[in-house]
Image 1: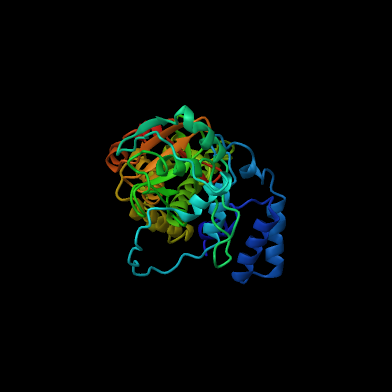
Image 2 (image 1 turned 90 degrees about the horizontal axis):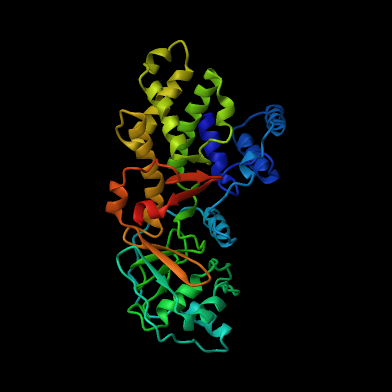
Amino acid sequence: MTLDELLLEWSYRSEKGYPRVGSPSDVSILKKILVELKLSEEDISSIIDELEDEPGGDDLTSPGTDGMEDSDIEDKKEKQVRSTPEPEPEPEPEPEPETNTLTEYDELIKSVFNGNIPKSKNTYKFSKLTFDEQVKPDDLEVWKKLWTVKPKKKTGDQTETLGVGKGELSLYWLYNHSQSPTAGKLAEGRGDDAPDLWFNGSGTDGVEVKAYGKPNGVIDLGRFGKFRDNLKILNLVFGIKGLSSIFDGTIKDQKQINALSWSGSDLLNAFEDVIIFSNVDLEQLSDPFPIFERFDKNIKFIESSLGEFKTAKEGAKLMAKKFVGDKLALKPGYGGHLADMSINGFIRFWHIDKSKFDSYDDILGKATIGASQGAMKMHFNKIFG
């Protein structure tokens, strides 16, 4: 196992999707991996002791998550998804008949309103566009009352029910129990890689719900540790940049820049070093220096994963598009919406238009995309506004 593969495996097994040397559980995971690699107890102790003595080991747990949703629900969802092994592909089952109701959500609403479901006499639009909506004054009381409501029971097999984020039940009520065209059609989408709600029956018009209340459009899309190929490419790219920085004496500038925390300009800067190495005949150098054979294989892996690129900008744009695009394709899915809402009733629906995403040229621009402590961030107004 190479160092890159070791870091990738440690990241994948870590609770937060990235390793922290200040976390006893993460250090314990590393010890387990080293034991699996059949290292001696003396070597393992030496590695762990050196790691724990490394200054600045807790940098990745420091504050700096501006734009993150003010909710523990997303962390709960990510932990549950990560703890479940990815199943082998199976034939898709036949769709179940639509019931035009979401029993658990309706029961939750009834529990709040003494067995009744309030009805709205208002109409709220929903279209294949990016648009804003405002909850009408006579619906705000119900909207606010449902804002933090979530399931408290367990499912039939006694496994814990996936959480419901802030505003999710409010949005469900607003569009399912009003005079809107979507009334009676909403279905839940909670689960691995499914959007929070389906607006026109299960599997149709997915909507991922966020509750930042920030119309500027900088949205956190959650952890990306499960996208292992993307994480491996980023580790390689920033690893090459880190090595180059050691030689040119700028390593201090790279302290906070890595696969888990970066901006578009950082990605572009890192790909400049990838281009330099790709233009060197590393295969020829591998005879006296075997390490260059690994460099050559890693660079070829980057190129085969992203496609052909001749400049740093081309490579960085391909990586940025893949980084965000793989996530969007799952949640909410192209053609769906991401909805950001506030408790005061403002809602912005961004339509996830694949043609807009594919044609957007300034993907590396300031605050457009990036990562913060293992979480993916994107400026939705710039791309889908």
